[in-house]
Length: 371
Image (cartoon, rainbow, N blue to C red; front, side):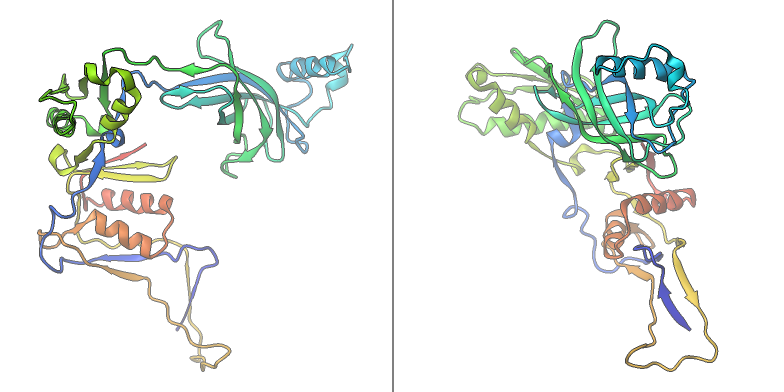
């Protein structure tokens, strides 16, 4: 039997999740994070800029020249650049241009003048593909009517997914020309826990961590500066002694360390398909399960080949035993499973797929959130 790995980099695993080996060490394995990891300032809001644009240079995959929604702005561009079109019918055979919607997400905290941000473009007409095109200069405004122009967008198209050629991105394609700055706090500010970390116990613990951290500073004088207002909001007062350097004070608050175990959150796994991030809260366990994935080629040769130095007989094993420090017989910690994924060099998107399969089989003892 000769086993050869498939041509693509993923050696599809059959994961055998084994029972525990060794004593429990659940406290030692608790994650430590910062306030910034699990919350945001209430004033830090994300929103999108938007605008219409033209992607040019397409190889016959653009909009039909009979689509006036594309022809009119194209004629305006030509006229602005010294080539007026007295009759729009002259553009009927055009198939190299596509009308697109351009969007740009402003990160929490806003954007400074001349910042460069990624943009997404999506076709609005009959264009079949944006591959090989370039976005012509497009003005981006806020989402509300009569919003001013905040950024100018342009640049070469980068395909996101070959299966969806009508949506693409332009890396660092938007340049900010008008600042989008969030208001600076006056005498206090609110922290808002991310939805997956919400809970009265979690909010109270974050407030306690901030107070304990600040209590040990010379300027504290026994002050308690933070308190939980509800299951997501922590109100933080800026002491008089910190008014001269609010940025340093806020930075200290946001870098305060918080023990994930003390937040007393329920077990849940959060998979972000867009960013490829996998995070989890609580003590997530996995029951014994076997997961098979496509991508390995097994060939049987008769008679059995004789190995040589130039062509040795190779046997590849794609079973991985997972050792764990779980104190519950027959269970494996998710953290140990993720480490096994890394040993097998499994891409994050495939890790998410495997976790979803385990959840469907009822072997993931946690709430699964895919976003």
